[in-house]
Amino acid sequence: MIGLALLALPIAAGCSKEAASQKPAENQPASASDPAVARVNGVEIRESDLAMAAQDIGQNLQNAPPQMQREQLIAYVTDIILVSQAADAKKLADDPDFQHHLAFLRNKMIMGMQLREAGKGAVSAEAEQKLYEEQVKPMGSEEEVHARHILVDSEDEAKAILEQIKGGADFAELAKEKSKDPGASDGGDLGYFTKDQMVPEFADVAFKMYPGQLSNPVKTQFGWHIIKLEDKRQRPVPEFDAIKEQLDTFLIRRAQSDYIGKLRQTAKVERLDHPPTPPALPTPPAVPTPPAGDATKK
Image (tube, rainbow, N blue to C red; front, top):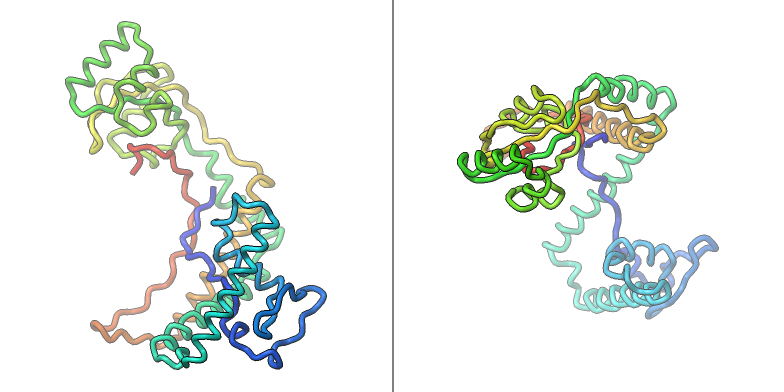
């Protein structure tokens, strides 16, 4: 429901490069909450390492049984330690390109930690309710329609199909047979949508129709449409509890966006590739209407 225009927070993934190359004496002892599960050349592999490894390769293991997934994660972390130790023996970590990349990853990870700190305190019952009242409830004042359509290449083809429908042919079956739109398999069903979700030529016609009405051929950038209006209503407002999690996410991301904006206001940013321009502030997250998922969409 609520769209977010911010980048996802950077998170740490994979076994720590520092931990992988440490000598045994330098390792911090495992704790009851983070026990060691294996030891490779004196370097411990802990449950937390497996959790980070799962962020790296977990999607590739989804079809494996849980115990096999665990064994593969341990093998993955083991390989990271072995190969990184071999690389350290060759002093590959001293390579300037590696150091540059490592510094970038370090900054990205600590940025994620700082942004999580910036988002703390953004969520409260008062803030949730205020956001719901200001951004979600007004959706109920929007009109939306439920329509089907058939999309073809030429006006003549659209006119011929319209005559078939007027003669008693089933709209949905003709859509499956004739329409080139991705939604043709659903009988051309577009579901409910608001006016701003469709290209203007299509929306202007659809929102002037009444339920059960057929349109004349309508031309858009996608081709020629025959529209059938199924229903018209005021957009329903989702219940607060149904979108509470989305409200909380929005509040956190907005606080993070504001934090970055304040940093930019006091930062000295110099562009060396072209004449300097004022730094752009991040656009606050918006609450767009849900997409209709159709070719006629903007």
